[in-house]
Amino acid sequence: MKRLRFPRCMAGAALALLIGGCAAGGDVRKPIPAATHAATQAAHRLVVVLPGRGDDLASLERRRVAQTIQAAWPDADVILTGLTMPFYRQGQASKRLHDEIIGPAQGPGNRELWIVGISLGGMGAMLYEREYPGQADGILLLSPYLGDNAIHDEIRAAGSLARWNPGPLQAVNAGTFQHELWRTAKTWQQTPTRAAAVWLGYGSDEPFRTPIELLSPALPADHVVMLPGRHDWKLWNAALQEMLKRIRIERDAIGEPRSRIN
Image (cartoon, rainbow, N blue to C red; front, top):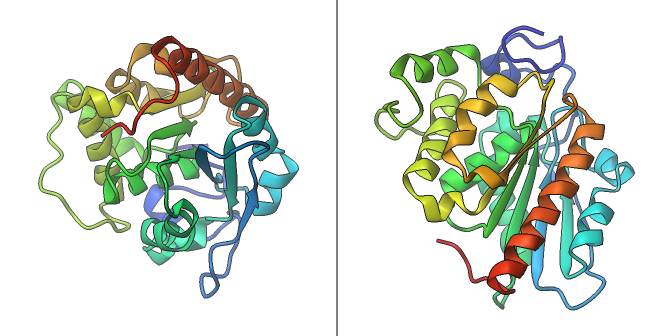
């Protein structure tokens, strides 16, 4: 694995958006695949899960992601999605996620919205935050894909994310999405109340560890979970459970429920 550090069949970020390669497939002419796991008690949260590049709706079901979330949050309706690479390549992933999944599922009421993004899905969660800032009460990033080496080198050359200038806001496409990802991270660093809504998990032997550690200073230190492991489900299951536990402890300390963070 070289620049993109996804499976070896990909060589760069723009290529990953333009070519399906060994990514999970999907028919963009149809609605985004989704499966809802209803809360086991009165639902006060909606959790939407975005898969990694090699995963789809069926693999999220096999990994029992909804059951892991509901073991910690029995008051959560969980929607597993099949927001796979073809939807990102189409260039409308955030809008379609909002229009087809999140908007209809939220409905009336004040229940919280949480987004869990795994690897490629972490990128998807950040791009959703860019398009719909503050819509989610919480964002859980598991080993998020954060672009290619060039953008990381640019940030390091500036001295840090805090010193980096992302330039004018741009429409998201294959040539701009990396800057827009990091622009979102920079807004978190500039807005501590919003950063407090974000949680980050990754592995000690994580192929994305270097760029993730460029991002982590933008978040509260206790919202960053680094565990032994690599870019795989063993790590993600453990990190997800740890993040859910920390969120519960934090919420208990300030009194549940907590109002929407904006």
